[in-house]
Image 1 (tube, rainbow, N blue to C red):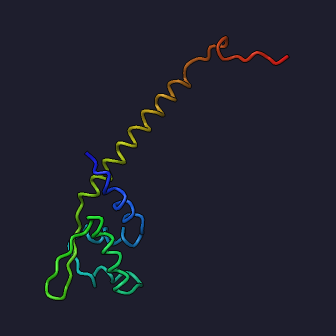
Image 2 (cartoon, helix red, strand yellow; image 1 turned 135 degrees about the vertical axis):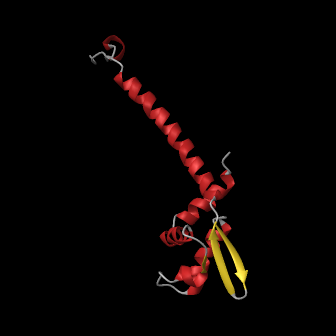
Image 3 (cartoon, rainbow, N blue to C red; image 1 turned 180 degrees about the vertical axis):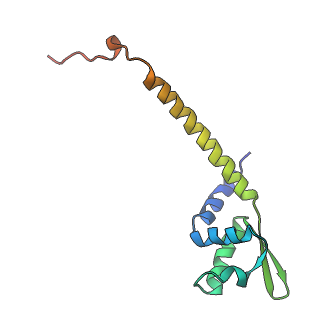
Length: 118
């Protein structure tokens, strides 16, 4: 069952390209904040804000070792998002199939023809 209350924060976190890039990097394995910040032309505090959004959405787990913060990916919220997307895809696929079936039926001229105005 999809946890609808977490979908908003998951989709909000995924809406930003920087956060998606961070998640892609974390998919390769754990990284510290400096490693995650390296490819971006922004300050460490700015990267930390992105990490906080990901952490609040449940997509990231942070572990502190001394002064170093290690981050790893948590995929549970992504599973909920995928499940919701699949439910929506199935719903609209069914509706479009029904519409196509309706449109492919031969028209009954007596029921669909409008009488000309006099």
